[in-house]
Length: 122
Image (tube, rainbow, N blue to C red):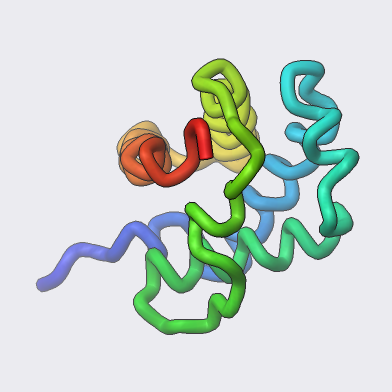
């Protein structure tokens, strides 16, 4: 018997959306990165929808994400390592608040951290 995928263990689209909503709200309240999010070209609602599609596509294999690539989305932003850590901390808090298990949290953080070269200093 196959074990459930990370997508399934996260609660599918509904679980991922709940985590994304909390994470984006955290970003808007995080003093390290809140200005970047407040001045973004997308509304908070649009960010949640885009991030939800991004993660659902990546974790489920069903291609619903139509947004920019990571390098294109972060081009010209010159994001620092401290800002990336702040984003990861916000996502970790969101996963914990939604009751996601330690293994799932670690898997998600590894996936996100592996995107570091596509995000930092772009």
